[in-house]
Each structure stands twice: as C-alpha cells, then as structure tokens.
Image 1 (cartoon, rainbow, N blue to C red):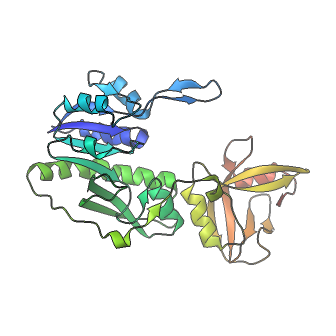
Image 2 (cartoon, rainbow, N blue to C red):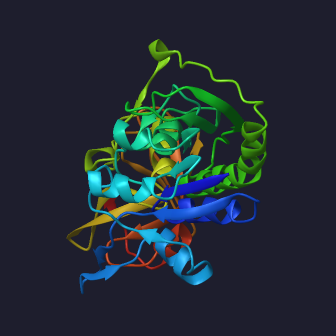
Image 3 (cartoon, rainbow, N blue to C red):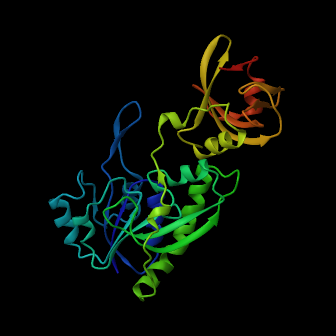
Length: 310
C-alpha cells in the first residue's frame, strides 16, 4: 500500500521507522514547520524531519503551514495514497484532506478510546490512576478522536510508571503491532466499531495550573500528578532555602504511611525526606531545584541546609 505519513515528535519518528521495515511504500512524509528553540531562537527541525533527512532523504518531505489548504491537498493527492497514517502530527486534518486516501486515514492514539480523547491522553490516564491503557488504531473523521475504532492493543499501567516510561512502552507496542494491523487491513480482516460516545472523556492539554503541587490533596493524587508530568513539564512546589524562594520540581516519589500538616517535612535525614499530604505521605526520590540539574533527593538533602515547603 502507498502511505502518506503525518507526524512531528520523536514518538512519531520511531513509529515511522517501523513502517519502513514493512513492504508498504512511504510515498511522502508531512511534518509540522520547524520552530525556534533555545535562547538563540534558531529554527530546529522536527524529530520526523531529522529522521527522514538522515535515513530516507529520497522520500518527499513537506512542512506546510496549513496542511488542509487547497494547495497542500492538491500536492498530497498527487501521490495517490491508499492510506494516511497520523501519529502526533500536531494540527487538525479537515475532512477535505481526510477524503484523499483511497482506503482510510488512520490515527494511532495512545489511549483506550473513547476514553482520553484529546491532546494529553497519556498524562491524563496517569493522573486519574488508570490501571490499564493501550493504543487505539482509529479511522479518522473530522471530530477530535471520534472516528471508528479499528483495533485496540492493551497493556497494564503500573502504579509507579512515569510519563516517559509509558510513552516508551506504548511506542514499542505500536511498533510491534501496527505492521500486523496493516497486513490484516490489506487482507480485509479489520472490522470497524463505532465508538461509544457517551463514555468519552477529554484529555485536555497540560497547563501550568496542572503542574503546581497541592499538598492538601492525598498522597496518591500527588504521586500520580508527579509521574504524569515526568520528565516534562514537571510537577513543582516552592521551597525556602536560606531566605530565598525557589521552585522545586519533584520527579519521582513513593506513597508511604504517615500523617502531619500538609506540606510538612516529617522525615529529614542526610539521605531522604518525606512530606505529609492531605492523606498519607510522599517519600521523595528524584527532584530538580530551580537552576540546577536533576538529582537524587539524598544528594539534594546533603547539599542543603534545612528548608521548608512554602
């Protein structure tokens, strides 16, 4: 089959790499425009662009500002694709573009649809304490992740799994199962199932307010928040050290028994510290102080005088 691939971040590049290992033909790759990065604001290529330029420079690569414009659609149509494969592209594909492929426009979505439609399905799945997640192969329509389900692959979501670890697991799951899915699709073995829209939940984009830790909440809720935002953007609190207020990202924790005033440091030794929450407590393992690199809590404690959480 002739495939046009749409994707932008590293996870999309990894799945694209697995497609090149199949017998299908990648006739074009579409990625978002390069963006300024760092203090220099120099334009940085997307991960998908980097991958194509390094490994398959002969494959046409396009970065349209408006992917659903008539000009873009005309260009993409010229490749006569059988399929679109869309992975974290980062922009909405309108219906006039979705109508281009002969068979289907397919999206690989990192949740068990219809739960967690939207921009941050992995983060929201972790935040709400889900015990199971997976990958949904979906036939795209003009709605936000509302298309028919073609196949679902499930894995357990471990209680201490971070966002980074979950993304790696779901990427591996996609890479290993998608080639078989494409074969079944080509052989007519795939059944479409309309989503149960009444069961849908929305995975809203992560905002700054989602990152601030509120120690009056239960330790379980905070623990899920912290791992859902690890490594980025990171859940944070504010600490006072030698009269200065500094932001402290907390990256890895464990729920433990214990009580006290929310935000109170109840255990403080040269090797670790534990913070009381609204219910139970959190033992802190990994963190990052404003202006510093990520470190173990034991190294942080040894390098600081007594500090308080504001």
